[in-house]
Length: 303
Image (tube, rainbow, N blue to C red):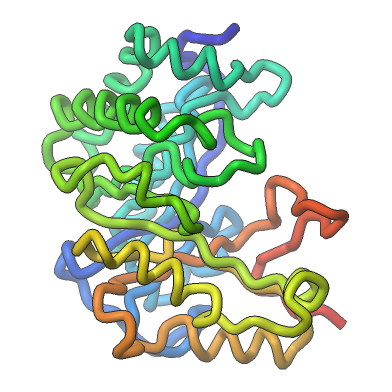
């Protein structure tokens, strides 16, 4: 089982940013690739589609806490600074080498026994050296029970214990970070809430796949169809809400409808302070043969 922090092998880094209302940054215009609207926008954008777009204020980066190449954080910081963006860093408690991943039980007990403290402390120590505003999103979508993540589907008390422990470690060495607790957003997510003192922002995931909608729901679903119940659950905690992962794939009218709605400042969502596009192909296949949707801007419109 892997337990050590390995800083010698690059795992790569993506682009994405979280400036939100908390950072005091303003959304610029005109957009080059960003959707129209006024809600603050960012992207996970490892291929640089939004590199020259003045609209994004949030640069989203994904990192594993094993086999992490720490200089990639410095690179991401420089990239964000050059574009007046803040960093949203999703830190995944595993390795990206699938054949070397631990079991959920090993991860849970390892966190409980302090095996991973050095991983968190080392990475957060780098956070403290960065010049961009940093928001940490640790062990996201913990309420998802499809088996994708080894930290998801735990008993809520076990997850809360692990989450609090890791946030305590990170804040001790990087006291200026913002913390995002980021469930998928399904019913039952509230059971994993770690407490107000451990949450500055609540993140959600919202993806629209037209083929899935038609097969599972009998017709197209809109951005607001999916967001509304998730937003209502998230807003119940009284924290600012961010769509931390957003994507949509389908025929042109479907994509256009989503594109024209995701940054609208709807009065029904007063706590919504940002949306962050996932500009990359899906990493894991959707169930029931729906494959890996390609959320990238240039590929999301299907014939």
